[in-house]
Image 1: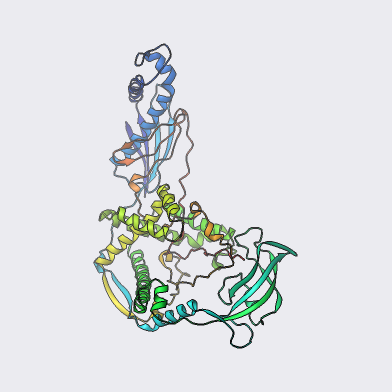
Image 2: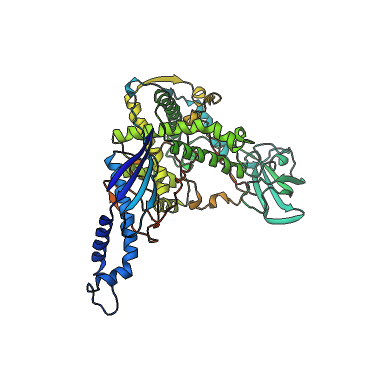
Length: 553
């Protein structure tokens, strides 16, 4: 093999490779000899087929396999010999091949830059801690008591108010015609629960028992049932009774109803839950501080291809949100050119942090264990009650999806490693200060890809009068590419496919580097576009979609 470096500029490398015809012929002969005992032709015993006939029948496919192997092996050897770690898939273009002649092809690759991490012992970080008291615990207990309490008829006649339970019959109509799922009798609706679509419960506030009224609402555009989405509807409603909720007694009986052994055990469980929540928020704030410090203290040339892929992912996410009617106000009305200019710095920051954390992990042999994978897989499955097994099977059968789950785990392990080396000062703060969203200064510097103020968990709305179409979403449709700063095994990137004599051949490992199959046409091969990386929502970015449930009636 003859290798000539034709370009060495920045992170770009290009090579011309010539594989002698004699080497190709030697491999073809060896391969034909290898398969002769496996071939069956009428009139010939196994292994006794004449070499000339064998070549006539199988020479073309064998040649394709040999050429593909030659491209794979020699590409891997070039990368290995020059100690190059590709940032993305190398581009391969066969420039010349005639049967009986030399094989010539070009390699174009962008490499991972040399990265020198700062001395993490010089990092100063702040961990905010909260001194837990019983204030939040008692507030939670009161809410639980109110939610778990029984309902009883009104002690005296009055109009309905928020918190009451109204017993109603209703019939929904669109254009004067009743629609499926829009009818119920003796339905108990808690006013203010958010169970029904927007505007429904509000119109039942301030009514008397035995009132009959028409409730006018509009189904949301993103409603789960397509035939109802965005439609104006009218509901004929009869109020049959008004009940008021009485708070439950805060005692052992209530605790046991909630799965705890005693009332004290219930309080302790609530206290621990708050502790975990506050700890999680504190960690996210410290992690954001850490990523900011890493970005400020490191500067190195970034692979253009990675930045472009990242930027395409961001723009693609915005487009998807726009099509779904869930776009953030800050990007509405902006052209692709404007979005590209606005979010390039964010893409650059993500790539910088991704390469840096990947290098720290590689240099310190940080690994995601099978135990780590199992934990995150179980946690993900628990988000879908009743569908746990389907979720697990989905990820087991989709390596890319599973790898996407592992990315945040790997990132957290690298972050934990850095935090252990850094100087961490604990700062006692109030709950309000801990949970207070921090304003992001995005105007001059869009680098806050890793910045996102931790928000309080929104209260989940119940939907008893809904068909729960959202719960029926198939696991396979769930977006799983949650890419934070995922571990990049850049040294093992695959090479884009090229045709070789119109036959596909299995890939082979060379010099501990995987090089994907190449298919080579005899005269020319089209260059393949680098595979686009998907960008999913991540906690360290301001680009986020709205998780809107599908309200139903």
